[in-house]
Length: 262
Image 1 (cartoon, one colour):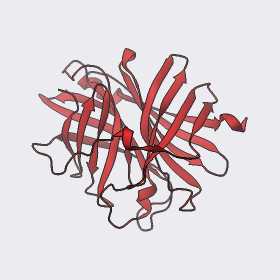
Image 2 (cartoon, rainbow, N blue to C red):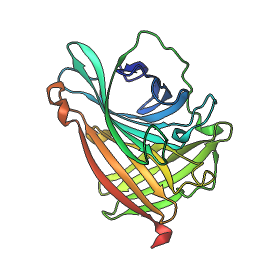
Image 3 (tube, rainbow, N blue to C red):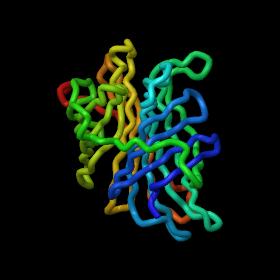
Image 4 (cartoon, rainbow, N blue to C red):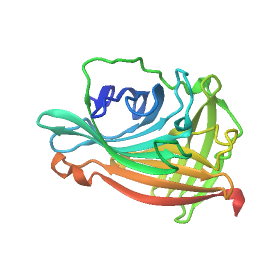
């Protein structure tokens, strides 16, 4: 069985996910912080998890609610998650490293920064909200500072394109990542309201899959709208045995400059 279905974590937050091939879409309902429903996108690679080997998963979340309601600073945030489904005592358990990108202060909750957490999900018996599939055909390209070609110090290249759902003001990111080991598709989100909200940082969370080596990773961080530097944290997950799941995700940092900045 793939990751498709309903998952609930230790905080009581729930996500319902659907899959088409390796691509994951769905919605997330949080029981902490702001209330609402949020877009989820990402990748799965490899076969279904077994006792011998897990199934790597990478997800991105846009924290702008798709069902409206009162806004707050977290509507500018995104999150990247990476890990795997493992089998523990005969049960599927989804363990993800979570990087929350707080691109602006949220009084009485947190200051601007990157926040790391470990989340554990188990399958729920029934959904408590409806999945909202990301239909990219209904998204329209927009002018956004994230658009274009981004080059890292190590030579990796991101080609990014931002579209928007005008009704919900969601920034959906597609494109590709080119590196020494090939070219790979990207899905994810960015805060398209950062400029109009007079923020200096624009949050981003994108996912990449490398099926040939059974690896996924999330790239999450911020674009500095003044310096035009894109600072991302990469969380790479490979399939490991359940007993070795503590080594399932590796973290590193990446810095990019826009090709027009050179």
